Image (cartoon, rainbow, N blue to C red; front, top):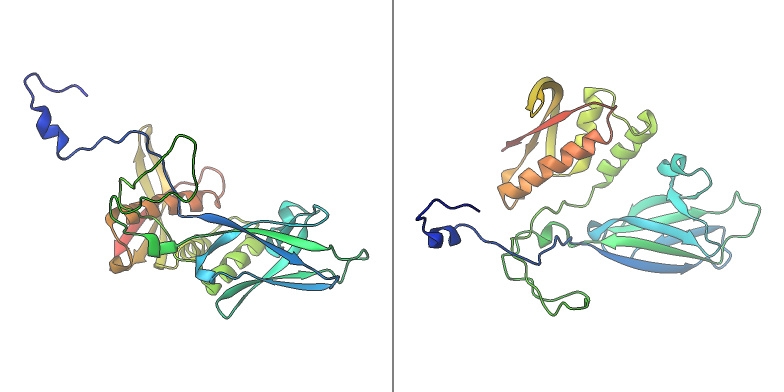
Length: 256
């Protein structure tokens, strides 16, 4: 930093803080669940954690080393096995159907999934997180230097159904404004409405056409403007990954 000659460095220290040895931490933890099939052709596996804390299924593999995917993702690896997902009494249940296979069912299944504290972990003030989940060489302690923010609520059953149906109809791509709006609503349950329109945006290289998507949210459901800004950026990346090549999005948030 180059200060003006004769500048008072003490004035710089108050509004600005410099932290060294920092890293980004995510509110996520991976767990493993082992299930014996007992030779059954229909196997049910229920995750013990409440569904609002389950972030996603990371990996499913059987005792022979075969990988399993949810049914709507089988196009990614046709050789993989499949499982169905059900929500029951606040828990996530996975169903494995081996009745169509000529060979015997595998001896066991191993599920790896990630859990999170969700939005309950938002808003923790600076310096309140001081315990390490696991030890690291050369690291004896730590503390959060910024307020925690950015978590999203778990997807509702309706959001999951909307997302899966969009994937099946359009091969993971949004091809119309209505589909873009449906994808946006499936991103975060706090998004109440989404509307699309033609627009332009200014970039360092000039002006380009884009799709303006306006979303309505309830301000009281967010802890800070920083959390809203993070959701805007993540939603833009989410939509771009599901749109045709060279489609650009400009996300606008309307607070109610």
